[in-house]
Image 1 (cartoon, one colour):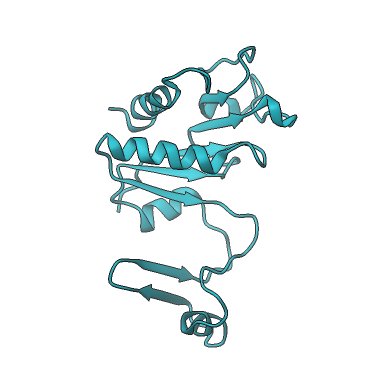
Image 2 (cartoon, helix red, strand yellow):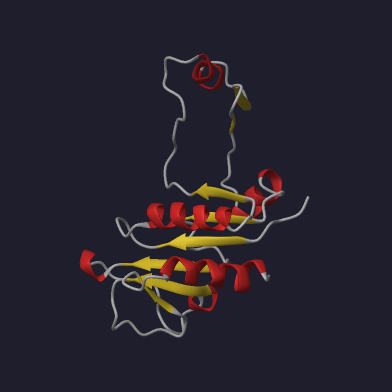
Length: 175
């Protein structure tokens, strides 16, 4: 199996990571790329309610894996004892993607786009010269005064999404 290229969308809470992930995925799809996404969560989750048979398979039956299959979708819930890296997940489950857009995984040594909005009053993650700053390909922001050693893409610029998609193609996908 091959590991597809991965870009991580990072930022603190309520900055717009999900919105940026969705918009970038749609733009990459529009450009003809096979796009797959993953989302990092800091706690467990259930994708089906406790009233479903698949929930019972997993929780009561202690199945290692439960596949949920319908005419138009497939989902796999797999039990593990140790968290896997985004690289391992992409290689095992998303290997046929042209690009994987991963929301979160800020500690991963992978290319990053940080979304940071001054208006939220929260601190940005980017620090010039830090070990993680070497992985940044851009910062998407509402702050026209932000300075960084990577491209700063302003939401006020009409072509901000095109700029980010171009950077992903050039720096991550290498096309």
